[in-house]
Image (cartoon, rainbow, N blue to C red; front, top):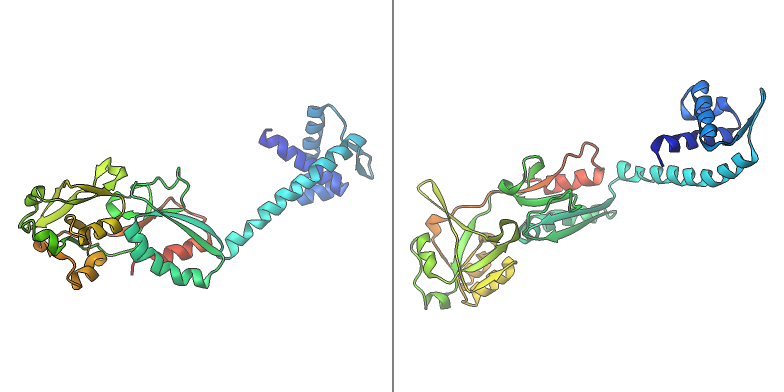
Length: 296
């Protein structure tokens, strides 16, 4: 049904319920003459008289009464549904889907959302961890979290972290079998533990810097994972070298389970950003989430 036909039917319902063009016109905020034309046009379209008119009163015909009985509950449901949206405008409430990578979720999202969700129990957040670069619009997410360089330029991007220090680590048992690399090029002779990145079509590259010059090394190894937790476990087990956020391996380094190499070559990753499409009329709940995650 065309949109203007729905508007015509809504106008008929108003006149039939009010039994007055004057009162219906005031209810719909339009002139009586315009309202009269709408009802006349509707009657011409259906080929039936829907309202009986005299100089003193207006009432639905038998056919008009049947149409009114069918339409009035539908328009009341529509009005109630629209009115129900006010809760999202007036108070923090709703469910929000965020696509992110596991490191950002663990280190930045969970700690910052904990107090927010405790204070606002009507806010719910669904966190989906994945390494593919999601399209938040087509994939029906409210927002995403990725490294700043990966965010499309047409998105609003809010930094939620500082730069991410990285480390190349291996277990002492591994280094008992393989010499420690002295520069990144020697990684080709090592068994590296690889993180799969679907959005890149292959695996991630390990980033390094020396005297202000950045470089990337594409490594190979016996195991490929889509989770950094398994990479860390494999590294601790002596199965190969791992390239991981420093905060994820610091405890293992302190315990002597892992050892760092290539420290002077390490380059931090760019900060994580929360990204989302333009939200001119964003809800109070979404604004609270953005504020809670923002890096300070």
